[in-house]
Image (cartoon, rainbow, N blue to C red; front, side, top):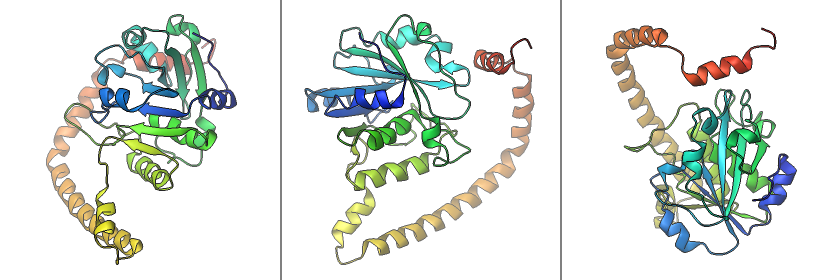
Length: 278
């Protein structure tokens, strides 16, 4: 297992060695057997964080694992899950771990904290500063996908299972701006700069445009925006009514949350933020 880079320019050269890079989301829409069958030589598969959500057996194709960091360091490290995740990549095809930061305040974990595996670091904080909505953090998949499209234009970047849809098994965390990410991803797909597998193969508005070719695309977009706006307003009224009912319960929940002991992540973050000698 060779050493991995620590600079964005070196990472761009690393990914440029591959004809295709497939980013595999932790999603029910990511069909691993289908991906194995569809892609052959010259392809790198990139997985993210808790891969046991999509893998149930060892993966023996060229693979890279992205471990996202928080202010407490790499999530897999402080949760002590490095070994549990890496057991899905037992062979020589496993290239190692990319420790990623993409939002202000996130910090890397040192390479030796990953148990002697090949580790590289990629800092994309400045890449998204002023572009991604300031009150949110880019998801790992989005951060890497858009950076790859911009930094490695000759590489075919494929998103597998990136639906941004809540399911019975997995939830969507509100510290990411999912709507913004889907808009950017779909614009890049329409421009032919990004590919996608899994989820809805043909968006509903595309089906409408194909069914009624005499209607201008901008008219379809305008009517769709009007319909969505009306539906959103109806949803907002329902949410307001529901909140008035559950507001007393929310107050009680807030009291109990303040009484809960701090999590290990919070303690690690406080320790990292504490000035030396303090």
